[in-house]
Amino acid sequence: MTDTEKTAALPVEGHVLTASAEWSPEAFAAEMKTEWEIDVPASEFPKSADDALVFEAEGAVVAVKAFDEPLPAEMMKMHASLNPLWPQAGAIAQLHRAHLACAVIPKTCGTVESASLLVKILSSLTRQPSALAVDNGSTVIGPEGYREGASVMKAGELPLFNLVTFAIARTEGGKLLGCTMGLSLLGHRELEIEPCEAAPEVVQEFLYTVASWALKTGRDVKPGDLLGLDPQNRHPVVLAPSSVIPGLETLRITLI
Image (cartoon, rainbow, N blue to C red; front, side, top):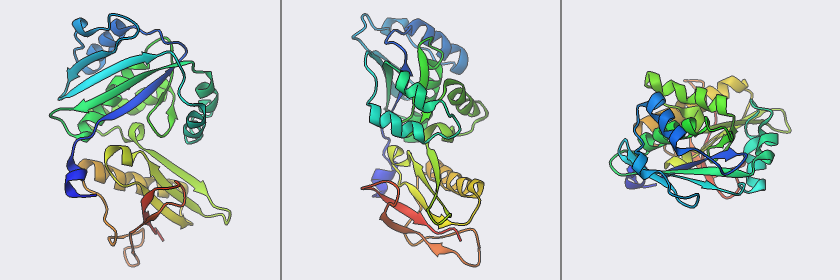
């Protein structure tokens, strides 16, 4: 990635899985005002079911549109499997029959700001009676869990768990590996931890810390940077094909 690619503000998108394509722009506007103090003009409400709601907020253009069809089943199955904290994710993903698509296109804000705005919008959309879950592009999150993740913004924090998935798996040899999914949607390299004997919470905290730093500073860890848990024995970061995500190069980090 060039410096320009790292700093350019990128459009972001997400989906709310719903039981039907029916939704209330009026209720959404009221929720946005109450929860986030964002005005959604009534003059922009869609005139028919085929129209999108388009408005401007916080330096970006927002579009919300209902689609009377589910998202692809295989994608939903994969994304649902990446949320072990919500066992119902797979079943809920199979139940949805329609979805609300939301896109945020930056005008004067940056990628992190547009992503945070997206979280506010999706969080408010989970209040719709037909809402079943949120698909953030890498995993499926329940309405309550998504709103809880969004609530940290009221204290000035980045809603990182709503934006990036921190996946951890055990190898056949019993070691743990971890990776991020979602950083690439925000203009950054995905991170991958080489198989290690660290505890799961240690792997997740390390990935969270590096991902948070990348998003807040707009910079990536670079190949050759020295990282690791032992200050006396750190290893260079390597840009290499992922062992988890086919066809993607990730920044691979050796912790121990």
